[in-house]
Amino acid sequence: MTGRNVRFAIFALSACVLSGCGDRDRVVHAILPAARGLSEGALVRYRGIVVGSVKTVRIVDSGVRLDLGIERADAPLRTGDQVRITSVGMFGDREVDIVPGPLNTPRLATEGSLRAYPPDTLAAIREALVGAVVKNAFERLGVFDTARAPGQRTSSLQPPAARSHP
Image 1: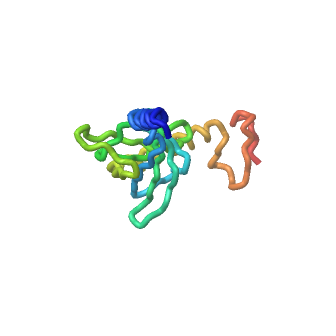
Image 2: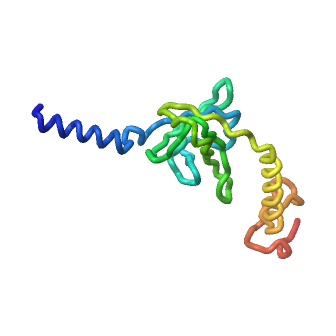
Image 3: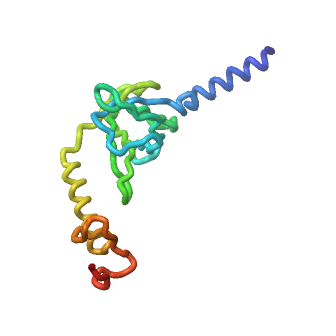
């Protein structure tokens, strides 16, 4: 290798290190008590911005281990950050939300681990309430009628009053 090639290689390596290109596909781990409805490929957000995706979801003795592929080098993850699973959208798609912790905690290393965010004690009540509201809306539309016998179908093309009940 000539001196010119060596200088170019050092320059390219330095630029890569300074730009954070070595961290582009870093993996961060988290262990949660449960991961209801979460699947591989789900989005990972930090401060509302998509920074990666869930690579693997595995059952372990202490709960569920998530391997999160962090694709954005500018996501300043720290050891004090915490992970929680959130529902988004009309159908409650699951995502991973990284909740920022104290700024005075050290940066999280590649292959580092994040703790679970404390559980939301009202989550089950909210889920039941949303389920009841959705069920009520479908009943009003005649799409889901609890007064019908199991197996009977309701046509969703007619208003409920126009349907005949056998």
